[in-house]
Amino acid sequence: MSATDPLLTYGLVLLVGTVAGLVSGIVGTGATVILLPVLALTFGPKSAIPIMAIVALMSNFAKITAWWREIDWRAAGAYALGGVPGAALGARTMLLLPAHTVDIALGTFFLVMIPGRRWLAARSYKISAAVLVPVGFVIGFLTGIVVSTGPISVPVFTSYGLLKGAFIATEAAASLALYISKAITFRTFGALPTEIILQGLITGSSVMAGTYLAKMLVERISLTTFQYLLDVVMFISGCALLWSALR
Image (cartoon, rainbow, N blue to C red; front, top):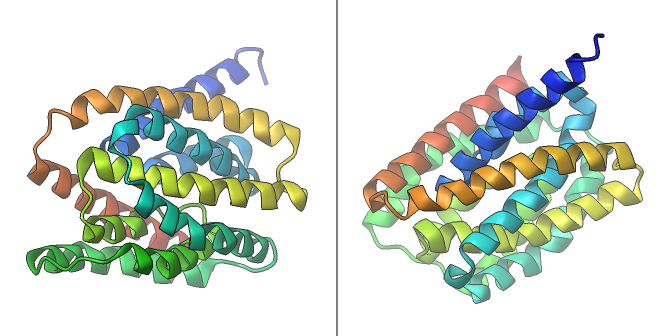
């Protein structure tokens, strides 16, 4: 390997990370779909998942600081109340079991929820903060097992009544607690050594930059465009999970 290879490698990771942060900052999710293949090729598939745990922490922190005044703390707190123990249990399970079946189930769910989310919205179906507690536990558990379940939270928080900046900020605040729980579990069981943390911090810095840039775009796009972008991300996420599980 030549002396320039590491620079080119990290340059690619930082470039893709910025794009991933931009997309995630606009629709609230999607960074994993874009960034994970690059991380798997660069650092190896076994390292990609704990690296993404660090990246997710930084990405959600950027969304929170960018949209601080839009956060619905009641919804975030209820979701995290169930999600934190769920994520810890899921992360421990991930270290012991294969997740192909979960990938297939989640991929199918994402695709089904594209029309499902619109069906719920057309009927003005709303969920309460109390419902977010058990839903948070289930999604937290799945988040601990697979790399990311970001798109699965889309119909949850939009059914609660959050869109655009409020959705992005509240989902990030709730998810931050889940990823802290997941990262602590990884660290406890030796899956998050110092080298992985440094790689995650480097990658996460570019994702944060893209997230802050995204705020300017979100403030300018229409609600209809925002909802179409959510559907696109859910479609891509569902197809990516199914492809990964079945290949």
